[in-house]
Amino acid sequence: KLLAMAALSRTALVSSALAFACARARATCLGYDTRIDRYYVGLPLAALNASGATECCAKCDAFGSGCGGWSYVSKTCYLKAFNGTQNPFYLKPGAIAGARTASPWPVCAGYENRIDYGFHGVPMKTVPADEESTCCAKCNAMGDNCHGWTYVNKTCYLQEPIPHESDFYDRPGAHAGMRIRTPWPVWQGPLNDTDLTGPVIWQVNNVTEFRVCRAECRKRK
Image 1 (cartoon, one colour):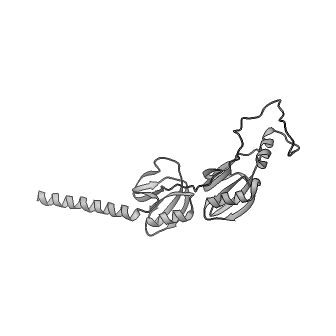
Image 2 (cartoon, rainbow, N blue to C red; image 1 turned 45 degrees about the horizontal axis):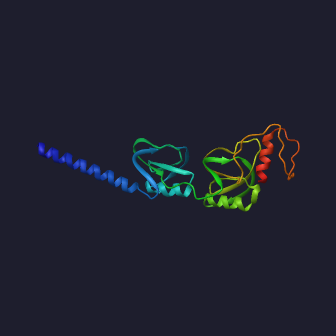
Image 3 (cartoon, rainbow, N blue to C red; image 1 turned 180 degrees about the vertical axis):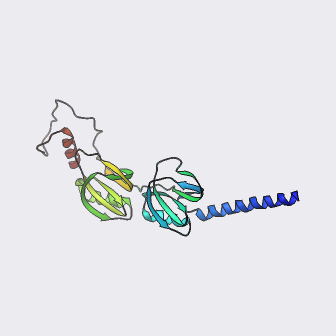
């Protein structure tokens, strides 16, 4: 009787291991770190019906690189934004989760990029785009007046800067880029009681503080 019970116990363990392996195999998809009995922590982006966990990978990819991972529970994919932590999972029996492992950013030289942010600027132009690198190219094509962009829902929002305002603002699921002005040196602050030598190239009247001058100068490179 004891031998029979031991055999049944071993069979149950093997079956459990096989079931776990099969579940992991079904959840595996390229570009994601998938976990069984785990939930992905992140700002919610969308909840979409799905018949299997691998569909969540495709849905996250289709959402764009603003999607950093997903959780699959009760035939639903919960898409989430990047959370910026080393361990984006927590224990949730019965759930399956995936964290994007591929780099979220395309190569886009000359821009400071941010995840889950929008660029704080004056709207210039709206351009449909499949990826962020298009925003960089379109902004470059508009010349020095385009200072940055926000990419969300497969659309580039090209913008001019706003004086007195921060360059970025919180916007979960969005990506933003700000043009890096070269060969500008690092901003060291104003020099009191000092005038710069050289020809006058532009004049802005009715200025109440030096930050306006800095913003206007950056716009004109």
